[in-house]
Image (cartoon, rainbow, N blue to C red):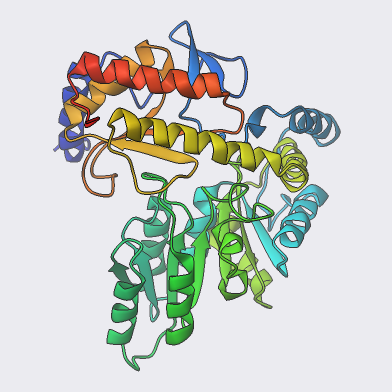
Length: 401
């Protein structure tokens, strides 16, 4: 048997997708960046609406200058993990800055956001514990749960009552209970009703972790996420997130008030056995965190842009997710049509994301757009017109009665 035999189903599905899609939706190459919102793809100027660059900070002058200075001073890599030679003063400064920003005692910085959630979930929950995961949680959370060897219990998406029922079924069975949710879910862009979940957490004496990857820098008076927006930060035990969205760089973090948080540095495998972030990335992240702290107008502009795009799509007759956030998706019924739609949008001059089952919440394909503060109203309006034209070209019927 060939070692690749197990991938035959995937190979067949990709061949079928390639038959209806001229360009590879999972291998799109941005040949040149002209700005945070425009790049060159396939030789043509293209609007970038699939980058998660929510505040446009991947192109900030402050971050670029900080990165350049750090590379000249420290070099371009650490060549080691945080528990070996990979801890520089810059790492400790960023952890201090993030802990202070979140008003928390401690912060751990990871090399990617994936490793932050993977590491925290797999370490905090042991084989005699129970993990309660929202059905739509990110792959990194589910991967971490498998590494943890804990008992995994899924509850219905954004359904606090279902979580309560499942917690109560355990009764007095020994074992810690860790609930894991997200602030904004990355496929539909739907927002958690977090107050309901913190109430369940308190009633059932469980721990609560929230992944604010898609809500950090965007929600809350200071940009700390959904927990800040809903006034429940004191009820959150662990907050994880990423630098690769609003902060515009790469990496991840966990903040907490737990007094033994630093002990996790000695047992969290994705932290212990991965080279630490290079100095230029840490310096750029620190610079962009200062921008988030001092420029609330960026998230205000993002919300205006997202609202404009969402309502325009609804008026045109597209089926969208339930909430307005930085992620706005339209829902289609079948994969071939979604693939043709994505391809046509790219040909018309815009890059978005194609999300396919089984990675989508309800097993229907999605066309996912990331809205940024840096997008102009003209760019937003142009993308709406591109969607309308693409729908017409692929035979998608819009419900615009």
